[in-house]
Image (tube, rainbow, N blue to C red):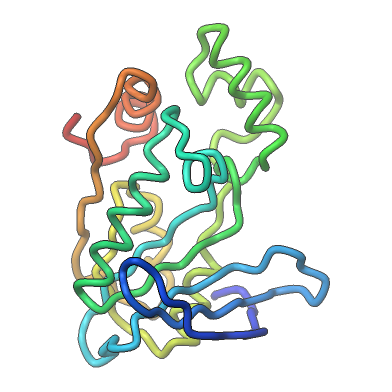
Amino acid sequence: MSTEIRREAEATIPTQWGDFDMIAYISEVSEYSPDLALVHPDIDVRNPVPVRIHSECITGDLFHSQRCDCGEQLVEALDYISKNNGVLIYLRQEGRGIGIINKLKAYNKQDEGMDTIEANIALGLSIDDRNYSKAIAILEDLDITSINLLTNNPEKIEAFDESDIEVVDRVPLEVKANSMNLNYLKTKKDSLGHMLDM
């Protein structure tokens, strides 16, 4: 069963990838940072819709941090959905759900030699506290019943198991590793089961 959400506002947003309809969804009236959907104007809900569920990463998405692959994945996803009439859902769950302050604290632990999992545990935090029920609710609101999901994360695929939305295909979204994020990506692959060729 998906989370209850509500459309709060929407507008056309011209981007370097073309025009998208941006829709802001809230699940609480007081919610300061709503979840967002960027919807290609030509989506066809009669066929599987390309969908990227992207968790907020202010360091990677906005400031192009090299510690992760998030910003590059976001660019690749926007490029793909612009060419294939898809949807990007931007969930406000920074740092795998721990928030930006804890994420920066975890970075300090990583600089001491810990991987991302060890750093979170050392801080008494969850390894991955994300939840995809809002994304499912947004897709239902958009009348989307089948998707081609852009992801390397098996948990995102499994999130749809109890939903009415069918994941028809997985579209890999792998970007080239660099010297700063190699260990981060290896942890994703070896410890979190992400589908990466590396």
